[in-house]
Image (cartoon, rainbow, N blue to C red):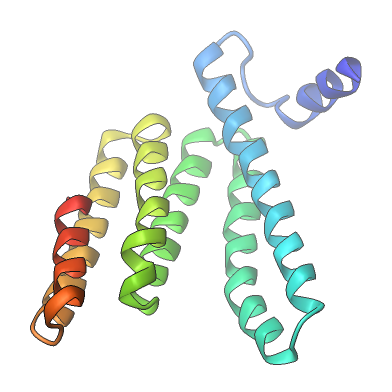
Length: 171
C-alpha cells in the first residue's frame, strides 16, 4: 500500500521539485484536498439522486461548478503551477462560501456558512500569497457587511440579535 501511494505521489507531483519541501507539501495538500473534495461532492450528488428530482437538480447546479473549480485547481497543481492552483482553490472557495452565505437564511448563514469562510481564510493564509489572503478577507468582510446592512433594518427582536452577534463574531 505504501509503494502504491509513493508511486501515485511520484506520478502526480513529478513536475514539483522534491527538494523544495514546502512547495512539495503545499502541492500535495492542495492536490489531494481537491481530489477528496471532488469525491465528497460526487457522493453528495449520488445521495441527492436517490431523493426528489427537484432537489437533485438543485444540488447538481451547485455541485458542478464546485467540481469544476476543484478539478481546475488539481490540474494546475499537477502541472507544476502550485501557487496558481492554490489561488484557484482559495478564490473559488471564497466565491462559493460567499454565495452560500448570501442565499441561505439567517439561521444557517451565520451558523454554517461562516465556518466555511473561516476555513477558506486559514487555507488562503497558509497556502497563498499575502495579497490573495487579504483579498479573501476583504471579500468576506464585504459579504458580511452587506448581509448586516441588508437585513439589519428589517429584522427585529431575537433575529436582529442573531444577525448582530453573527456579524460581530465573524469580524
